[in-house]
Image (cartoon, rainbow, N blue to C red; front, side, top):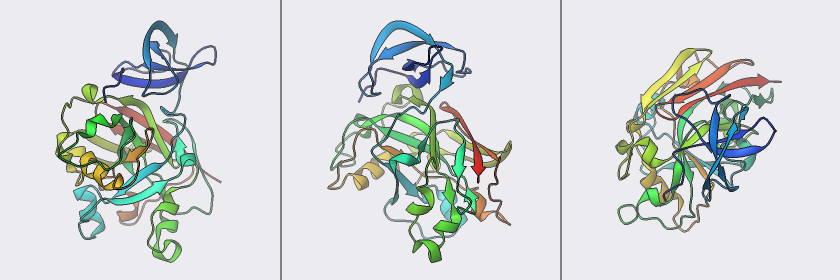
Length: 285
């Protein structure tokens, strides 16, 4: 699809009203006057001549039907965990209430221990997709744009005795999926064709309290969005508004020696070249 925006920001203005607007690149968003769009949904916006000042940057999506996560999708991370290379995308889901904004505090129940970060490139679906066939269909026909995410995880609940070897529960608590700060179109990202995972080559960094923990490039992805859409949409409708978290590179806390779990008050930043940065504080209680 061809969205009407380049860099879409959802924000609150000086009057407390919520808008979608066209965000500038490489500029602090709060305090900036931006052109706003009319319409309530990011896949159905129309340009206007009005402007408004950004007072608060909100989650770029007010809600999602579901979120999909892709496990073990960076070659460096597969080497890190020492698991076999998957033959198909490894899928888990996050519920709608896992969604959070780019600067939200992340509330963590004290029973969710061994807390970890996973910086991720996220894809926002802009048109319903079913039975996608890689090579026959263009993934960009279904992609609204790209954004940044953090697949927050409680590794305690991911361990086999607690999880039965299922990832989803450990990653599904409220606000365990902050995304943002903007949704960037394919044109603004700089791609017009997306056939292979390596077609999108952006630097991804994750920092904890200013210390770099992850530094990789999205070209290290094993499965690209075409592979992922084909797998997810097989006999299944992937609804517009769905967010796909495409996986995390090496450098997560769980595989450090010793593991360096997140603590209350820790600030996690995920930055992707051309997309901006999200920053979330862990609040464990």
